[in-house]
Image (tube, one colour):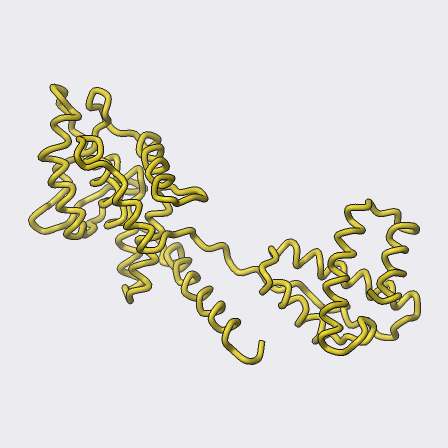
Length: 295
């Protein structure tokens, strides 16, 4: 690194008495800056504002978190203020440099292949496996909330027309198509799985638990889904809501209308559904950054 960087790090250690971990973090950021300057054939003292903005974008593209990039930019500002006071530069190029704005947090979703692996996990030779296969098939086919799923009653399903009626937030009812596969597995569960689970108990709920035939709870389904996710090699917080996100994302990727997705998800406002467009926007950014000749 340059003598200017060494002088600044000494200033942080001796005069400002910063913690050693903080100084080491600044040293790493400035080492990256020095390497960046070297690729442009310049000393760090000669970098322009445009150069520093390009450096910040490079750090973001390299996979650093928004917080780490913001820390690096703060380091640059402090470094060039020091160079001004030390009379090593006459103009501060970092004065108006800001960290790139973080992209919106995207909902986690599964790929089609991952959904297929997950759906294949329940052992459909058992009554419980039939129930769980029907649950996962129906959740992915409709995008329902888990509370809506476990609150279904047999009368809510219209098998001939291929749709169901669910009750969402605010007791608002909506109609959602089920799809052929989900309809088939739910029918099979009603015929071969539910009677075995319910036993002699009469239940008004569509999905019953494996202990006495009572109503299946949200927690019970979540635990089962997590187990199947691990068996399918899916890690990182699989939940019923991830399948809901997957439903919406896959429909949008295949050209579905955003308004139709809003109605199926039961969103009161279209702005709640628009987060899924960010998934596609993020992919466009990735492709652009990878293939465009000029950043």
